[in-house]
Length: 336
Image 1 (spheres, one colour):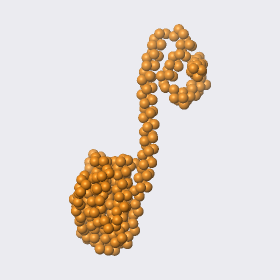
Image 2: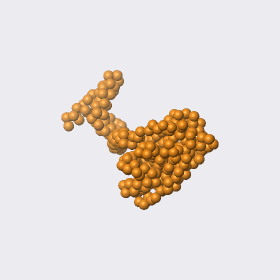
Image 3: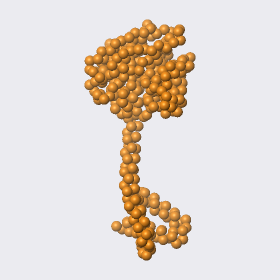
Image 4: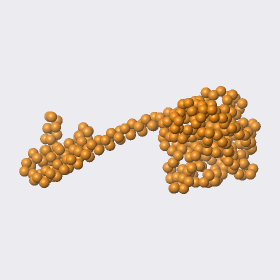
């Protein structure tokens, strides 16, 4: 009560001083009082009520219409104050959520980190950029005891923290598989059981898994409903779609996957990607797959990592630097 009386007294004195003199000192005092109100989280309707009390004490004979107008303003500010308080509460919750998402995004980066291998005769380029803080895309490299290279690229149908958790589970499931099961169809079959048992039925994961034998120039691969990749034939200078049929992970527990084989010659490229690449948009127009391949071919003379970086920058600029979906592109080029 004493604090309120002090506030009324201070406010009344400042108000009277300003009405009588209208100097800068009074305005400065009002500014300091306003800061104190903010610090003490005083709602706007209480400040209006404070003004009404001060005016009533300073000018007891104040006209009725002024009193009515201030009562009207008080009612307005009560509703405003309640809405403002709710807004502040939502902002605080939003700030906490952003902080939690930032922590989760950093954990995702740590958990899903994979090292791009150095293999004689194979040039590898990879770029993976999330559209938001949390990525629903995933890629991983595995080295086999038979000198083969396993390449996984996946996309969660669903984004955010649940997608990140699903991808972490996929990664550690892959790492726990023995090398004897590195064949693409076996990898997908095992992962399908993991997803079906542990991931919510509303969330599905597409994946393309390939096993490359550099010294045999052979690529074995299987797909679980993932975006088709492409094989660039250096001699013919043509792109051929890497077609592979298979059900997305997590639909049924006993799904079998078909395995395919392809020969990769010197200078050839294998292009693996997610739909964030093929479904880029320029305004309201979805680009055609041919446009993606034209840009890849445009930069084909660059080292693989520089190539994928330039392809990404091209489509980032085309979308005004606002990715609508996670963007992941992997290029393998067979060298001498």
